[in-house]
Length: 253
Image 1 (cartoon, helix red, strand yellow):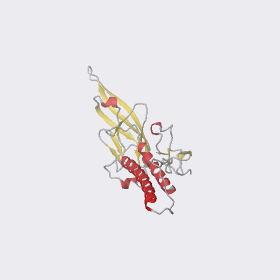
Image 2 (cartoon, one colour):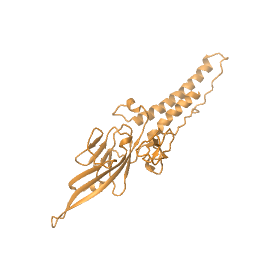
Image 3 (cartoon, rainbow, N blue to C red):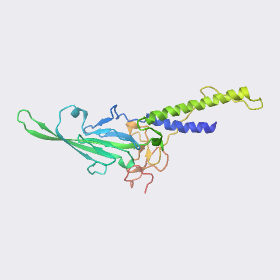
Image 4 (tube, one colour):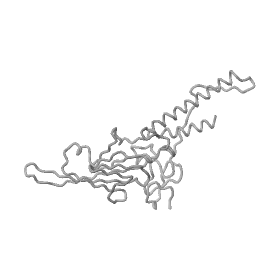
């Protein structure tokens, strides 16, 4: 019975991931910038990011004349499209097959013209939007088990809870069989309904940790360790290491 309890505990640990959704993800999967404040976004391992819009919502609701967009990546170089980075002509950025090295600060500068009706005088306006993008793992091997059109988190949570119910039903049936179909020399099993409990194990994979201060809008998330920190094991804390200059470090050189 202990083995079953330990198995269910591990399953419940995975179920907890289902609640780790950033509030920045809207229904349509678009995230707008905010002037003066970086927008934090959490992307699952090997997943596609939401669409990052180089514009704030207020600006998006107004006419924008001759807009141009310039995206700068975490390495402070101008972003160019490739197999993992998609930039549209309308300033939208999408990151594909997201992994630790893609984490970091993405900045976009929007340039557009304003024209005075009286004099037709043109003025160039520039606005900068910052997006802090972090990788948030799900579980090893989850990608191969999910259909690309399905919500893997919801399916996994449902399956884990169903597994818990089936395990409970197994013990209930075993108790009934032992009581009614075996001779009295076999010790009886007494199962109390709803007595089967599961316990969540709080840990993160190496290179990831939890930080309620840095990631207050995703406090329960295991998020990639930022530069200057590392996590060598399944602890939930990224430790300080000034010689680390990458995201997701598993050791302090």
